[in-house]
Length: 299
Image 1 (cartoon, rainbow, N blue to C red):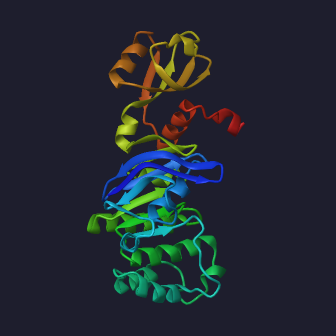
Image 2 (image 1 turned 120 degrees about the vertical axis):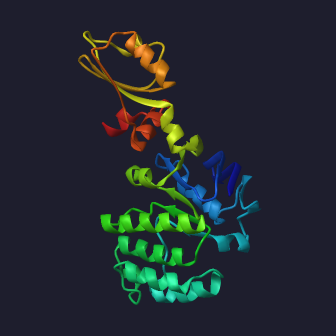
Image 3 (image 1 turned 90 degrees about the horizontal axis):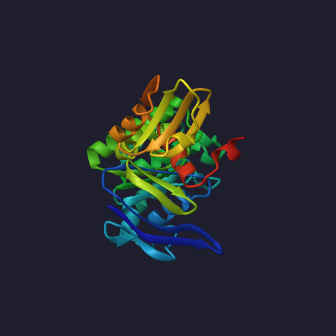
């Protein structure tokens, strides 16, 4: 289990992680989502023990991860730009890892080398970004980590390899109860994988809960009235986003589903539907509620 208790990380006068508290249960797939510069990559580095907390603490299996060899044996971190030296090949890095990771699994390594379309004898640094990520995935999974930390892992992977990666992660979680933490802007991919999410903004955490519960209290509504209505006509709703085109209104609201439906029906709509909310829509709605001006960003 990963426990993050009021963790703070500063770089000069920039607070990259600001008093974050959350718990990541064993065997879960925890998705870190957030705006650019929200602290996702920094938090992953803190969990893996690359960075030390300036305040608070991060515990992995009730031990601090920073400068802790035993905990680092259990964790494997793939950064958004995996580092390999100029002469590195997959085989050369595997030779190094065999001497570092006590749970290194040679059978897994050979099997993965056969599954991914990549030559383990070629220089990794001369490969494309997607192939470099494939190399990092092969090596990371071969260490048999209890905690796998991934930063923008889907960036540069083609659709076939993305599906292969999701299949491998699901297998490791089912067989070994491996815990996965993924920071990504690819919300569609996270939606397929994650059972929990943490929404970060300006170094803090806006939302941390299981994905089904996060959706449960959010409603994407499409409504048609016989006359034009404005946001002021819905004072009893907690409206996160609101768009109107003539008599058609699309809005996202927070609250109890039955109470929301009763409020809408009291206004006698011609048409009303509560639509499924995607992870991307959930993210945008929460960011708008936090004061993040989506319209000005995308205009």
